[in-house]
Length: 246
Image (cartoon, rainbow, N blue to C red; front, side, top):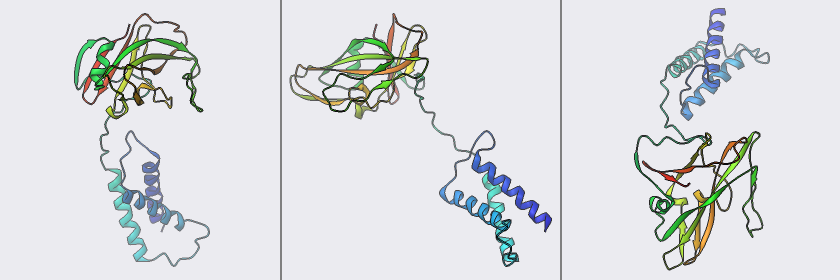
């Protein structure tokens, strides 16, 4: 009995490692595999519970079932983890390698790269501040605040309808990624915000000849109060482009 109890305790340790992330890689578990581990853990824990004083469960059939579960859990421990696609992290510039990088260009190339037919996108300056809220007539407008020791770098872009007819400036459906780089070590992914004028989520109807201002925002060290150069890194699928803003 003691040997069997020791084996159960060892397997419980194995289950704990699988569930809490022991080791350098955690294998992906299917719903069935996760259920298997939970079932075994519950069975073994119940067997050692003070309330479980009955010996009705101490049968050859139950022992065989637990041993079978133990074997399956050992197989899970040796399962090779699946490789995952790397994700771009907010606050870090994305990598332009692995796809086609178009020639560096100016702000006039932004609309063409994104696919905003009939629109012109121009650089409208930048601002460094502790917080930002768009000037809007909407009843509700969120405010974005910088974290401690950081400032917000707000890049303004003006979108103008040059098509001659009312049209929708649709950046949202293009699944774009933006990164802002500059001197003094500036370099970071543009935040995903709830701002109504977030350029990455623009999908607004703009009248012929009219313009609307949008922003892309990242964080920089609070010691940076100005920058002499700024560039916008854009990525769409496997294509990317670096646009010199100033």
